[in-house]
Image (tube, rainbow, N blue to C red):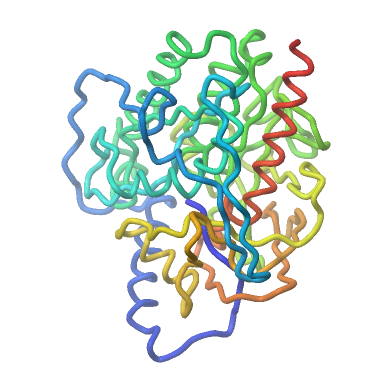
Length: 401
């Protein structure tokens, strides 16, 4: 998931001990998951017949992806007014969003239910794109945070079951809603893993669907290419984006601040990729595309998040730790941009290819062990990503009219 602010590497107080202990325990459990260390077994999900449960769908009268756009900037104090809403029928392209690992369930697969934490993450990550596209976001039986260790230790089924829901939802969307429209893919973390496999197997080898792909934002999920190339890893025909306004390509990166080794940036340490049958190992390079170049906005940016609280659970605890001792930014507007500002660049120290954030206006953030600033990946510079999507949509429309 993605939210956060900036960085204070030296901040440690006695009052933070309990919070740090809890976060440390969570980090160990999650880290063990990705490294394939087993935890005690838990009950398997019911593999009942699938039906698509839409978290966000343009036909719904209200869903988590429907948020006004008014925003307060804590640095400047300025508030932008609500932009005029574009009707669903007038939006030129669609977005297919797959959310990251957020479920609080103790299970190998989450229920096929739009739980509060799932709705919260859709608001944080997908809602800002809704001015550009009709948002289709399926609920899927993801592997929850506490189910990852057993799944990655070798238990068959949980990751495949999660992917089967995403694939079924994609086929449902194609059959009933697409009608030849362009599509932007948006994912983060486990959602990116699912989309890597979907695009690799369903879009990349299909010329017609490749032509309909406006772009893809595959954040915090170790997208691979052949080393030194823009393709040749996950995708043969679909390249990484390299220039402003380029469509039909992939935007992908994981953020960090100080370059600690982690689970992101080096495909040799990515066991989820291996479980999904995706390319991994030292012959591949994890993608990092510079959003400043792709958006045309090289100035410092902040983190923009919904002002409403995130639903309580594991992710909300990690968010609180990330911004401790301050809370997540909030205001009377629907959205709030924190006071911190930063720039970034793609770097590859010790084989970890990531987007290094350098703060120009500090605001405290604590990096998570093994996860760097994973919670920042989408929301830091969120408006740049939306602008990239907007430019890609315009370029795609021009090429298809």
